[in-house]
Image (cartoon, rainbow, N blue to C red; front, side, top):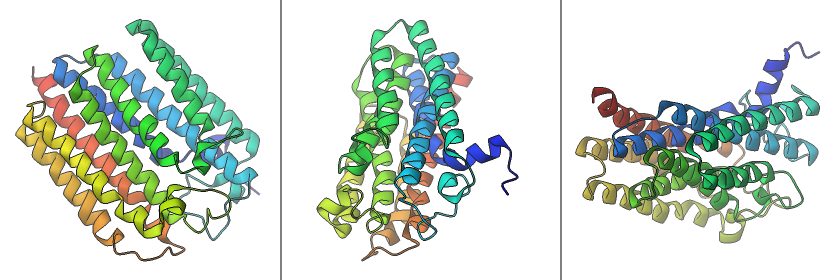
Length: 309
């Protein structure tokens, strides 16, 4: 008998830890925009954070619902994280997952429309509608893009780039190359996360999904991270050369890239020759550490000058 209350049950389908994969790029992107502008609109930052976080949770719940309806998960594929796979384990009911997803959609809609009302920018509304469709259609609908090779790229664009870009844009009220470069960094980090998950699920997804690793091969799906990381680093170098970040910020970013990107993750990840059952559980969280560390640290460094001003 399930003795958990409603909130405890819906927690098991929300995968809250990955909600920060959108929330933190929104946070640091907004703070970067404020840093460039010399002024922070705290309400826009808070509203944007809630919107991005909620839409990521919507995508997570949609994925849980699909896995449950399509019988894509079992005891052999569980990650062991209590915040996910609740439907498959029987910790939550389908109707509860749907209610949670609708609540997050409504909350993100309220916050998103508030941003449109404050900025009076119709482009934000258009991007918001597209983002909602991307979150829901991630796993649900007749053609969910999670089952195709474009899943990593689309997730990178919406979860990383667009969320980060819009958060910075509404602070500076203009489009410039600096916020575009910073958004590309956020996008690539999201691609790292999606790529690692898809590569770890290489055998599990066989026959039900055709992800990028199935197209380019298991080892190539690991090797492709190298040019992606080079592009990410190049964007960071350009931001420094063009004096959009200080030398302290530049070094901090490089240290995060090296420690959480290489030492804690890619150095040993690159050596994997074939998929194994515990691969997702062991390696899935590593890119998330990179995302969280980079955006938290740089967000703090963008905030300090604003506070001291």
